Length: 99
Image (cartoon, rainbow, N blue to C red):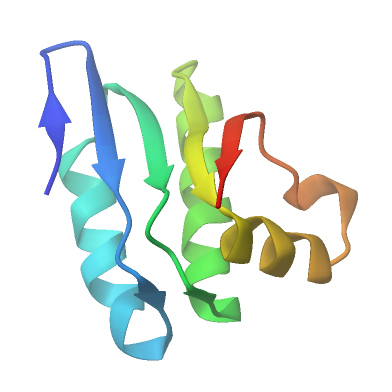
């Protein structure tokens, strides 16, 4: 699900980004190709490695196209789990963390 204009879109992420969420996440992102995307991670309580890979692959694809791919609001859980992966290249440019 996304709130979008013709040039940009906000993609609300599912609360649980685990193995079962990876393919639906990929499909949602593919529908937004060609537009700037801001991820809304404000409801995320769990971030798994496979969904993180999907997000990183999307970030690379958007960069290759010269499109913005940003992280908007994110939950504390999402921010903590993103930090636990520990690789500086995993860092997104966040707009803010919410509790």
